[in-house]
Structure formats: C-alpha cells, structure tokens
Length: 514
Image (cartoon, rainbow, N blue to C red; front, side):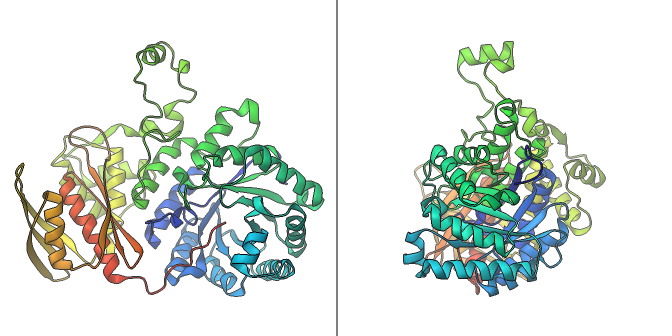
C-alpha cells in the first residue's frame, strides 16, 4: 500500500471505460479538452484510452500525454506485446507514463472467452508485466472479472504480477456483481494470501449493474485499497462505473467516518460534469447524486422552510463546494474579444489565435440573441467550437414553415468545402422536415436512433444542446451541436453525425473492459 495511508489516489477512466459507453466516440481534441479539465480537477491518474484499438486512439492518447504534465497518463493493454508497443508509441512523451495490463482470471472467462488454461494465464501475466517493465517503471495489473474468480488462483496470478514488477494491483468488479461486504472480504482474503501486496498499491474498479458501484468502491477503500478507478458522471460500459464525484464527495463529506483524503479540487466537479456530458452526448439525469440539476433543489414546503432557516437542515454539502458558483452571468453583446479571452482564462481555458476568433464569432452571434451570456454558455461555445475544425458539412441556412395539423416544410443551405448545396423537405414536424431536407444533400445511410435536446442554462433564451445518434451497419455515430435555436442545433448535429457515417472508421475499435 501507499506510504501515505490516509491518501486515496483517484484514477479517472472517463476517456477509456467511459468512452466505451454505447454511442460515445471522442476525437483526439475532445480527449485533450476533457484531460485538461481532469488535470484542473486534480486527478492522480488519467487512463487516456486503449492504444492498440486504432491509430486515432494512439493519436488521442499521445496528445493527452504531450500536453497534460501533472498527472500520470495510462493506456490499457491486453497481455500482448503488440498492445504494449502501441501504448509505448502513445505514451513515449508522457511526463509520467503508466501501462495498465489486464487478463481475465475467472473460470468462466478463461474457458469461454480466452480459451486458455490457468497455467497459460499465469504465463501471459508474467511475460506481459515483465515486458511492460522494460518500457516504463509504473505498471498496473488487473484481474478481469476478479469478483467471480477463485480466490486461490487470483492470489497466484497477483503474486506472479508482483514478482514480474507490477506496482499497482487492480481487483475489478467487471460485471457489477459483488456487494460491499463480499468485496471487502475478497480484498482482505487477497491480502492474507499475498502478503507482498502490502508493498504495492491496491486498486478497485467497480461497475454499477446492481447500483452498488460507489458503495463497493468505498468498501474497497476500507479494506485497504488506496486507488479508486472512476469516471465523471459514472459513464462507462453497460450501467457505468463508480462516479468520481460520488467517491470524492463521500470521502470529503463523511471524512470523520472514513478518514481518507484525495487530491481533488472539488470546485471543479460541476464544470467537469458539464464538459463530459456535452462532449460525450450523455445528459446527466436530474436526480443524479452530486451533479444532477436537482441535487441542490428543494420543492417540498417543509424542506424549503428548513433550508431557508438553515441550509444544513436538508443539505449535507454546499453547492459552492462542487463549483456551482460559476453559473453567474458574465458577458453581454457589447463585450469585446479581450474580455471574452479574459473570461475564458478565469475559467481555466487558454484560447488564442484562430480558436479565439471562432469562439468570439460564435459568442457575438449568441450575444445578439441573448441579453446576457453566462459561464455555462461560454463553456458550451468553446466545446462546440472544438468540433468545428474538420467538419465536412456546415449549415449556412435553415428556413421552416410549420402549422398545427399540417405538414411542415424545410429549406436548407449547406456548405461543403467551396460548394453550397440547397434542398427542401417535408415532414411530420419541423425537425423531421429539416432532417429530410439535409439528407437529400448528404444522403447518409444512417438511421436516426436517438434525438435529445437539453437546455444549457435556465430561461427562455437558454442555448439548446442537441444530440443526434445515427446507426449504420450496427454501429452508432453521434453528432452534437449548441445554438440558441434548437432547430439550428439539431440540423448541425445531424450533419456532424452524417459526416461520421460517411467517413466510417477504417480502424474499428477493439472494445475491451475490466
């Protein structure tokens, strides 16, 4: 275990396990934007991806490794030399690189997935960790499906990984099967069977299939784990991972009970949540713990009365502690470029040159249509602009004609390079008509599967944040856009998703999970 026994490392896997959520596909620039926020948040380790999955993934991890210097940057690997070589290519410029190596240890996975004997799993563990240590000094090893593994065999594998040079051992609840009491017993038994584990860092990684991810991770900390693997907003495979904000605020709010510390700057939590929600296209449920919009809302009269008299009657945390004070309105239509740049600097965004030029143009467009522009609006603008750098189709005009009980009509104008295309469409409503008109231009083979609209802020003039998901050949492509008019945002989101379908993916990602 770590020499600082009351410190818990936060290992964030938003960019790896989080991105494996259906419909999420982050490009390299989006990975970097989230990683920079994770750095501001103060996470200890960022798992930036699974390098061998594609050249684009290597590029994304490499960009994070090059620009984020105060966090350890990790890449996931199977027990194959090619995976480790790909991770080295991605992490070679990192200030503090980590290889995360895993293999399944449950009888179920060994027999039906790996088709390997226990002896072969042991051999691959030794070989992979040994080879990884020739590249980097920081190697984490994970027993996939650990909570359904035989304790004696898992102990044997962990002992082999430690002997080969692993510095962190992760015992994941890969399928969200365990319970807090059982998980604690599994870890305590492992410590008893492998005394040398006390010289390494024990890590926990939990999934939320039974709604127990956070409870299980906290039980793991009580059992001796000093690293917790989490994702912003709890995104991840199936029902997701343990949420960073839940783990951190539980340890902070109940410090007298748990007695552990993290290095997280909690006032950055709300911003991190909003950023990940926008770039992933996954809205945060209103009643989500810590970061849901209802987390600090009170409707019941008795509650309202109590909060007005003393907030502690019904609030165990201050909204300000997670950064909600950043919702204040900051700029208007008369603000200049320098003021916009300064506002972004205060928010932690360093923008200049073409990026500032694009953001300022979008800001002016929005400011002309809103009385005031809030910090949340500014975040939405910069997130939206980060997607504009390589767009195939750009919406230049949209005219709608609609009336209750009648067919809606849409006229669209779309720029593709130096060409401008126009088309019309009719549909059951304005969005349907717009999509039909746009499809007459882009001719996407994708079928609309999801259409979501969220308000960036409150008020009648709130920006609309629209997410469109198209499906083609069993794969999903997500487009997202922000605009004061939701039909404009919807149209641009459709074009972005259609562009992804048209481009395809010549290097399909290998989806692996721990």
